[in-house]
Image 1 (cartoon, rainbow, N blue to C red):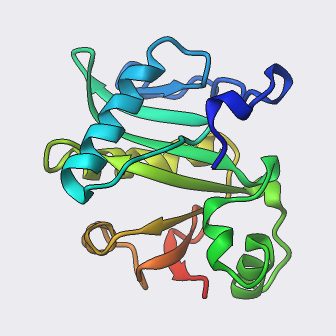
Image 2: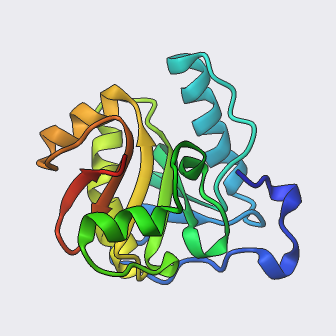
Length: 182
């Protein structure tokens, strides 16, 4: 994944457009001064829960907030902007695999990768996931991809997503269903 230092000013993502849950769901690009707090939440959660270091972040981080506190966070990257993290696991570009599953052409501009899902307190990640689909659809994406842990897979199933399996999943905001890519 690209780190903030690898982005040129022209390549910086634009802040997402206004969304109905503004104030609770906030978006943070690399130049946003509040982004450091969201990165810290993700780093601490990954270190405590998985013993993992997060060396770089997605271009846009989303935070679920209450009273100014970050309750949960996730990052996203537009497929149209370059290679996705999960594509290192795939035998073909993600749009080709989605198109094969969907039975129709899919443009990279319709695809977004979600990652860095972190929630220090139980239940907050679930709240964030429930807001992500509508938010990303509002931003113009038709397909959401990502790699997930078994814990996240189980949460997706409990939320009603079907065919959720670990590794590489796709979510069609139109079909409202997760499907295995590989």
